[in-house]
Image 1 (cartoon, helix red, strand yellow):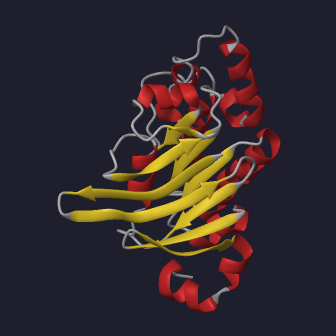
Image 2: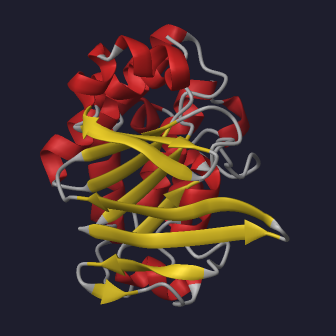
Length: 234
């Protein structure tokens, strides 16, 4: 479980997060929604330690990780997949996956890679191909699969649908939902495509100008016409 309490993050005089609190339970998808500039990406960057908060607390399974180094967060079970599908284009699919296990000290990385191919069969079929030959959807699968090599307890996903065709978006979101149901992983999903995100999420949280303006069951939020028009754009 990930717990975020009264998080404040600022860039100079501008507050990106203003007292944000939420809980991300194991085995659930928590979708963070809102317009551009709402603070969604800043939330993930702060939680994963890429940006330091001014105040507030982040706890992973009860342990305070607010000021922990990024590498320690990874070892404790945090994995962050930023937007942009950042793969190393010249390396093969398998070489990219191996990078995800660099922090692990056990010797079963090979077995974990094979398990990743079971989760994402398209990657297994292309394991020896250079990453630059993959489609956008396959690259998204690769960055998620690489993050899973660290055996995270919490997965932070930033805009996984960005730039993908609607059919591919549905496929990616379906894979994420299936992954959570299989593994009990806690997922904090930041997404501009609110309708698709709420279709797979358990809980939805709406940010506006760095503040939480709504938190509810995903289906309830999706059915709230006033909220959809005001903040979600569908």
